[in-house]
Length: 360
Image 1 (cartoon, rainbow, N blue to C red):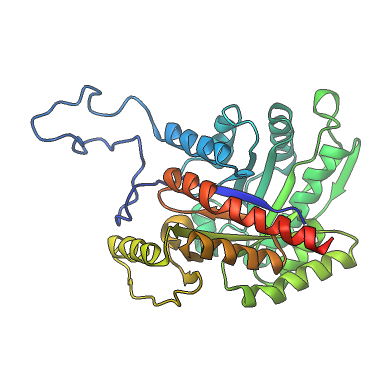
Image 2 (tube, rainbow, N blue to C red; image 1 turned 180 degrees about the vertical axis):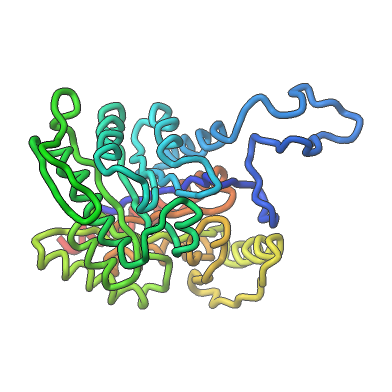
């Protein structure tokens, strides 16, 4: 089984500490005080001569250099647009898969497919989609999407069908509830390119069924291994019944340190800085699963907290349960990309390689 490790980019902001207000490294809001001491002038003027994109570039380079397989550009309604960020970072990375997350109301499936083909052309086939559901009905309406809940998954289903159809077939025709194409399909320089892989999410039976039909990877929300096993088995059984193979992914945060006590201390300090309860108690013999640890900032439903060895062992347990795509994050994303890439990923990869050799 091939394992991939993806590092999430913080499009909505990032900072060294878990202050209640999300900061954006490299930027200073108009009117905000200078970081320098009183009486010391800032030669950069009122605002620094760079922006948050420079910081995202640093994170992507850190992920590339420290051994990650890809980056996931998170969709944040108040953050920078994921497709633009992915395009900005494509030329500054050599090996990373670029996964742009966007919601179900993106717009024309044909136009999205054309954008994807262009990404594939100038990245050497490194582009991928992660299509989300757009939040609850109120959140979708704030983004101009009035579709009822019952239409979200069927619309994603048609969106993918049309997008893949025009990328791979000409002429292509389709008529559904939400999309219609007559004698479409790409020709000339846009024809015959690798179709981008698709990541989907969701915990409902309907979401799993959609992924079994359409996804390359289904990304589960963070949960203990035992809670995930039935859903992973269901997903893969449904995919096999359709003659397909769908990888199981996991979106989880990680806080790993030299020792368990150091990790727990930093975890509690983070929670306290964010004004959140910090009284979780774990068994020091294994990495602890902390539900909702940094969910307000990263979107992950939980985090693994422990020593490098413990977090590595926990990730190995997920892999043994069928997870083959890990979407990881930690705050701050730049420093932690190096930490996880240097101390955790090599341990997990070495262990899985040894296990595969033994099985052979």
